[in-house]
Image (tube, rainbow, N blue to C red):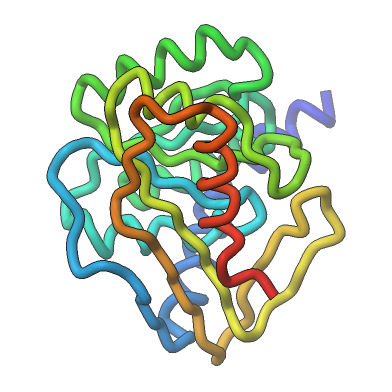
Amino acid sequence: MLKKTFRFLALILLPFIASLMIRFLYRTNKINFHSPKSIGDEPIIFACWHGELLMLPYLYSHYRKKAHAKVLISNHFDGELISRTIKHFDLGTLAGSTTRNAARVLIQAIKTIREGFDIGITPDGPKGPRHEVADGIIVMAQKTGAKIVLVEIKPTRFWQLNSWDRFVIPKPFGIINYYSTKEIDISGMDIEVARYLIKEGLLKHEK
């Protein structure tokens, strides 16, 4: 009973607090976008590593003045916290992962892209291995023809958690560098070539 009460309160309070923290960190850092000036109007798959996803909503809003996206979030308690947090940034979610119930999730994601939504995905989520690209993003892109934008988020001052993804939380009063690619088309590309291209693109600014 106590555990259920704790979870209930956490789901109400923590997402709101987390959204305030994200806004605070964004506003107290200098922000540099190293990105193309614009991307196309067609649905895009935005991809970043799981450990860098905290500040991703601001890269999305840099390109889309009106949010029309859903983020693939794993279907467990932590995922529910993330889902409720990003709703404060007008982002929807797709519950599930490409490692559990993979076929159902991929069908849902493909349908969502075809309905005109952008998709946000962490290619190494929800539980790794860290910095390894799972098949899901490749299948989504090739089945729909959607192009991919690869995103790296690199703060100069940060805390790094001792979790599998080495999750990064920017500290205030530093610089957050957003790096994103132009749209990448992997239609018809060999799956291993596509995997290598995505992985190398997401590690371009890794120290």
